[in-house]
Image (cartoon, rainbow, N blue to C red):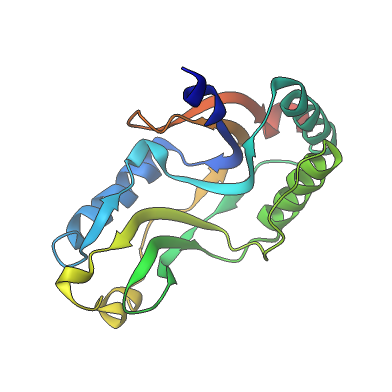
Length: 193
């Protein structure tokens, strides 16, 4: 029981609407036969991470949510589009396959707001540049040789634009599928009225 509580990880992210999750999952299903990753992300777990918080107590999480909510009060909903696929890690043997997002200043602004709110609440966050993405698979299976990078990366996803109406605090439950569970929601349209 003790180990369970110590592994409570939290993050704040943009959720994807169900039709976009389904469409992205369909695209992933078509490439699974040629893309030999060890783990494919469950469609309910698709999201765009804004800030990874790690292990945290509820007081610190509440403080971060309060800061973020106050800062996002005048932010209206905005649209995003998924661009194509890319990887993190070595090109031939990547550790992550992800769907990229077309450049979006509103998304960058919301991420900056979330990041600053979390820092103000005392979180020690990753300082790497923000690369908005949706992780779809993990750990290339090297027994299948090198990943055919150029074949996958030349294709646009062709998915519809979607409206971002909220940011969500998620908790990771490693032993469950799907493993990301909503703990709190900040709806943009309610705050902008």
